Amino acid sequence: MAKSSIKIRAKVKKGEATVKCLISHPMETGLRKDKKTGKLIPAQFIQEVVCEHGGATVMNAQWNGTISKNPFLSFAFTGAKSGDMIKVSWVDNTGKNDSTEAKMK
Amino acid sequence: MNQNRRVLLKSTFAAGATGIAISAGLLTPKAALAAWPKAAFEAKDTNVALEASLGSSSTTKSSDIKLKAPDIAENGAVVPITVTSNIANTEAISIIVAENGTPLAATFNLGANTKGFVSTRIKMGKTSDVTAVVKADGKLYSTSKNVKVTIGGCGG
Image (tube, rainbow over all chains, first blue to last red; front, side, top):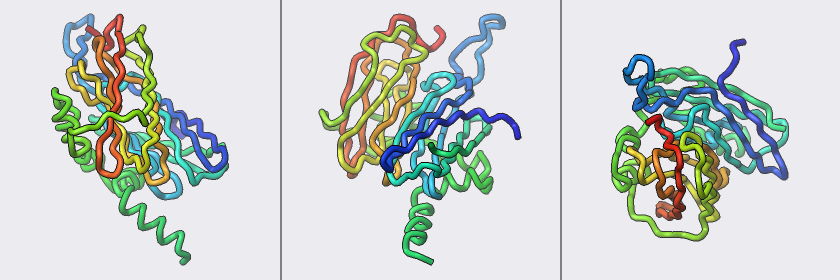
């Protein structure tokens, strides 16, 4: 299986899950210039991140290039149990996407 | 079929249609992108951005929102921001950086069981107020913090 760009750490305590994700992605705003060529580096940034649990969307994040490179994201939700699976997916402005599933501890 | 499954399926269609479709590979990325509020993220004016993203630009200051951000950001390219909303029925949280070219950095749409808590890292071009806007029960609330930036985070 290809290595995913998404690392997930999720813990459940008393029914509440706290999820931390680290996504490998350049998050280029399109405003930076390449120092060697002087040309603008084209914009490449994640536009949407979706987290699903139990078949429902728990969180949907909409971003632009303002979010830092290799974005970190953390959020929390109730109604979770240890051992539940969650799925995190992202789509960027060039149409690239990736998704990963992880088991919550 | 028990009631719980029915309710789950109902909420899936209502809330997660786009997300589920992307993961199922049914929606091509292009179609999914259509849901991204371009106008909001390209707006140069904070009010225009809020209108396009959350549906309104009139906010009320609230002390029930905790915005954690450094007083001084050593590196403008990576500024950690954490927003905790204690307002009931928080549906969405947006982060605005007033002095950035495009002020809207992110909007987090939260599910019914999702807590009003998000943490991420943003780029700041220069010293600016960072505002967390919370949408709850259709109304907007906000709180701001000034973050000093020593080295700008936009590569220039």
